[in-house]
Length: 78
Image 1 (cartoon, helix red, strand yellow):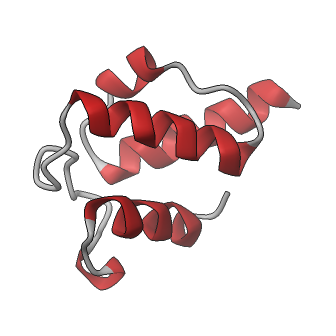
Image 2 (cartoon, one colour):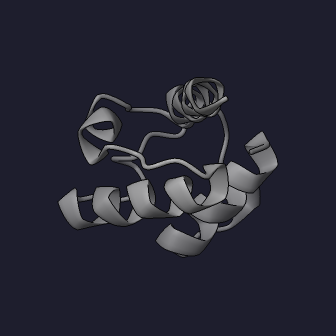
Image 3 (cartoon, one colour):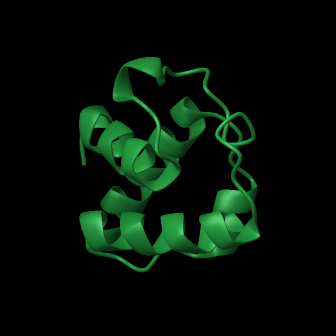
């Protein structure tokens, strides 16, 4: 998953413009609630090809941290 693909997932889920997303954008700024994290875990899992534990997403605050988590999950899956 590229950072651009991650931005596309977030833009679709939170109905925002990809151009408005940067490394420091927080999930709180996007209005993410518990249900959003469940959906995001599912979408990331589909994109990466592994199951994503929603609890790991609760530790993530920014887009950069989410990107690092996605990379870690990809590496764990290999």
